[in-house]
Amino acid sequence: MMQVARESGWIRAMPAVFVLIWSTGFIVARYGMPYAPPLKFLAVRYALSLICFLVWVRLAKVEWPTRRAQWAHLAVTGILMQAGYLGGVWAAVRAGMGSGLTALLVSIQPVLTAVWLSIFAGTSVTRRQWLGLGLGFAGLVLVVWRKLGQGGEVTTVSMSLAVMALVSITAGTLYQKRYLAPLDVRSASAIQIAAALAVTLPFALLEADGIQWNVYSAGAMAWSVLALSLGGSSLLYLLIQRGSATAVTSLLYLVPPCTAVIAWLLFAEPVTAVTLIGIGMTAVGVGLVVKS
Image (cartoon, rainbow, N blue to C red; front, side, top):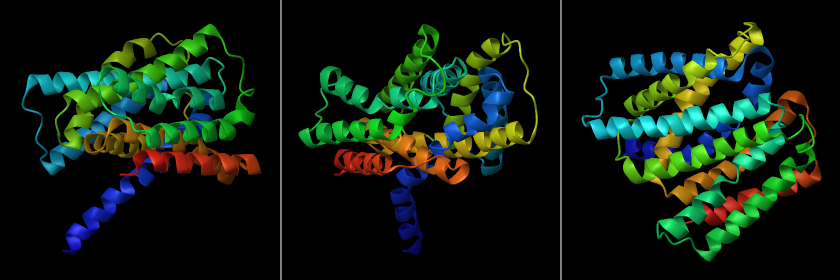
């Protein structure tokens, strides 16, 4: 009975833990970006994450998918949700787009997902959910608005990279929900990351600069592997497996507000009254979307 209660508590906590971990992505970028080209950093992250997952699979004696179709579907989602999304975000920031604007563009995903489902998949999105999506996006704009002019100009290259990231994670989420049956998250994540590494590595080798290893870049890499890849990516996989695509993607609305709070704690970045109002609006909006 206690085991069931613990499992139920963990399932309820999964969305909050995912948002907290995923929100540290831009913090990691702030620490690691000055010392590493984006694709080289991601290639090393994928390689180390793959090693960790392979060891985990071996020690836990986890079964691998038995059908070729499952391997192929996992590879597609890995390329979209790892290589396409993370590569686009990191490269866009490196190309000069401010982190606030990048976060805002990528966070359009819940609306894009809902529109796709309602038009092409015949899935009903209720009025309450549309209201929640709109309210959440409005709150998100309030949170990141003061950062939109920071971090450099918007160019064709940086905008294209951010849009690529947005399309990649949206398509990956929809694809996984449509084609992937429930699988063990450890072996599934290993296959996804291996596919992301295979796609990212050739482009990483084209980057002229190397990684400058110091306490900041090493710390960013360690957190990226242990928390973001092993923790955050695995939780995202499980959440998509368990919930509706619209409800899961709406959680990403909470990432920029949570990042703002973390940046306030770590870097003393100001959190204004407008930011707090935006966080409240976003939380209410997400609540309207995910409420059963």
